[in-house]
Length: 292
Image (cartoon, rainbow, N blue to C red; front, side):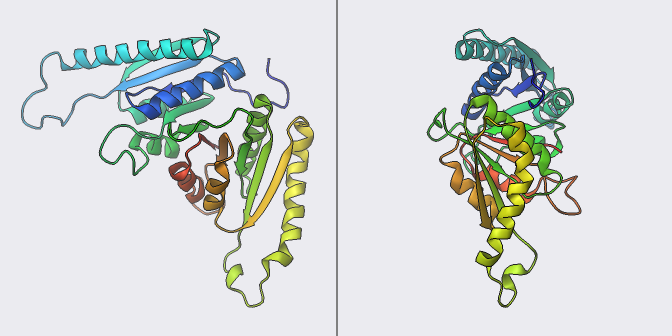
């Protein structure tokens, strides 16, 4: 049963594709579903081959073959979840005809969380965030987890890392980060990178003089959350500028990063923030991008 201080999530959706990062995302989602005691939906989307053959017609039976491959992939993935959780998670599968991004965005309307791999197959797979995960981050209606599936596995007692800027939209990220740390019985590293337009170019500006006041403000901002989650030890880190770089630097010793989808700015409600976008691209541990 969900406690008053916990973030309520009724189901988790994991995007299923034939790639290593997708497998890692499914395994992460399975463990998260087990941790929360909620069902897991495995979703695979088969795209209609429109434009694949601009002159010749689509081969007879192509869609049927595509759906058969998708069904086999979902069945194999369901078995992976059962092995990962020992059958402790209720699993359903969903095979749809749509683009993967559209299918996952639609699923996000009723999901509490959607997990995807960072990229699929292709020549650029090691260089850029996949189109599906990138599109989902911009359009999802719930928190999105991007799992890279590379690098060493974080220690189970490693802390959760929260990156926040103090904006109203960061409250959802703070709530989710405390909740994740509490469920994992680990500490929380709360990082705030102070920045103000033009401040660092001002004559006589001294960051070390300003740091104690920023520390005080951050401490006050987190006090209520620490009271709600007394079981979560918190380490506060205040740095000057370059939030994405500092978050990624500290992520090597953490098991999970939580950031907001956007911060300050006139277009913050419609675009993925530059910090969260950079962190998702550069980090190797799973990243949750919380929605406001």
